[in-house]
Image (cartoon, rainbow, N blue to C red; front, top):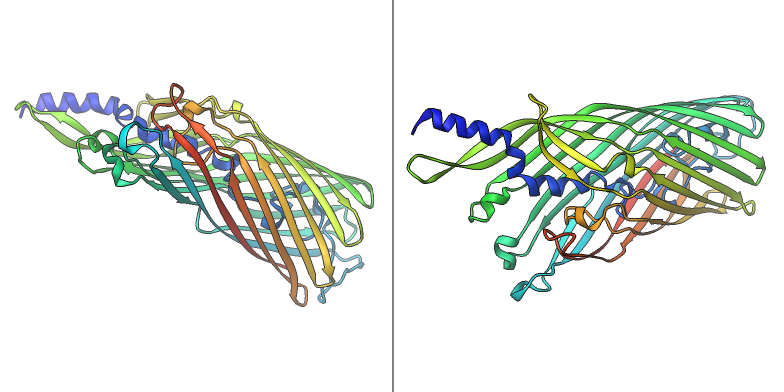
Length: 446
């Protein structure tokens, strides 16, 4: 073998390494946008009310995540769980652990004997924690808190049936942004509170799948893209307005954030050798990927319909047109674009409604509903994630178990809208897509 020939060939392959993994990266990109789709992980914090909470002021809400301005209004409780009207400030802890699983159905549109074959995907991060500590001063003019949560988390595995032969695909994807936030709130007027929080996170993308080039030759070797980074600072600002004792309005805005993820792409390429044959050569390339969680604008209201019933509703807007029009995987050393994928993502809108009913002094019932619109055009759709838009239905119970310790159990069901994808917009992943899933949330508050 001529070493100079091989060195030159390998150098060319390194510059074009992203091309050999086009399908790999194509499968990845929609996955990073799962945050605001039908599979919105977490479905909602709190789970039992589908995450509606921008104007909520009860102690079971997550204020750092939803609307930091509402921290001045968190109700005080004594050690027996009863309302506390003292002038002393009060600490509060609220934590939740969420378990989720979803089933995606894809019926492929292919000619011949493969027509109608259905593939299924089970996905969802096994456990998602959310926790916050808050302190509200006795005169309610000032409050602060800090919390940790997953702003979005996605894990997907898909394996087509063997009957598809070389057309079978396999996806194994994990994408998330695990965030930490510190916030403060102030009461500017008896009816008006404002607040803000500073956010940092750890983002990562870990995707593995068989090499698409070698799979067509019957060779099964696995590619992997693994990038991660701490950072992506952002700001959340919120306002809570209470025109009366039974009505409140909340608005919140979270700024766009930017991860410069770094890591490696492990792949395999075919290299010609002087004998006329080809050789499979492993290729490890250091790469970067910009992941930009979008700006989010939220607004909502809460009505205390009766002394026992509270109803609330939110509208959320995700500015995907400003962050997910195209995504680029680059070689870290040179900055050269290996793959540029045009996504043309839609802005996503989500409507969420929930309620609480105090059954008795120690038990409160929860319920909720939500709708989220789709975020990807047909051309950027893949079976690595569900991006169809859909509905969520939730319910749960909050019960005092000892002193001022409360157990919160919520469940949510997700129903995807059916979506038909096909040529000419998308020739790689034609099919009819749908799915369903659920989430269980178990939390403690005191």
